[in-house]
Length: 113
Length: 115
Image (cartoon, rainbow over the protein chains, first blue to last red):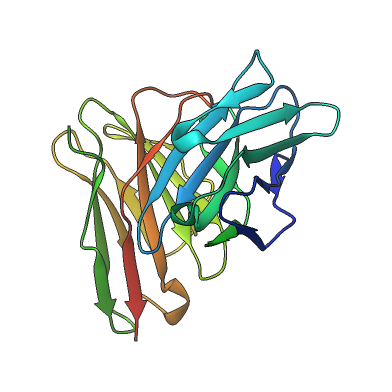
């Protein structure tokens, strides 16, 4: 069965420092992987996805993610964090041929000035 | 280009009442997904619909929950005889086509509170 794990409930970063939000996955076959961000009392916003090809995927708001097949990871990164990046981040994997998504529990990112 | 619309944004129901949640997908999207988010948890898939068809309802509780996406009008998630455990945020998402590689666009959610 497909699954996603986000090992950190919370990540704290100082503004201007690089940030990493971790995600590991378990799938049969080739994975389709996604990152979404959720601001308080809002829906999820799509950040980026990995389908195939280049292992480094660039997305919205300066975020990028690195697909690592041997480590079954898809960590989200940003070179320089902003206070406005503070939000809840979800990693997701395609749940099957129908396209429903399986989400991790989410990681709360807190960026302090 | 309006995004995914959901209403109401907040819904309060007493135990035993019915809750109806509405979702209008993005223009041009014919695939709708419903997810539930419990406090402190990620989203859990409930049901996937196309116009007039339920494609996958594997995440839907067997009793009291139903969903539809008629030829005209929004998709409806209906919860009969609500219980306190149904209190959650319910999110609708849409996509232009099917397939696991397609990103889904989410609405703002409906926060259901059962008293």
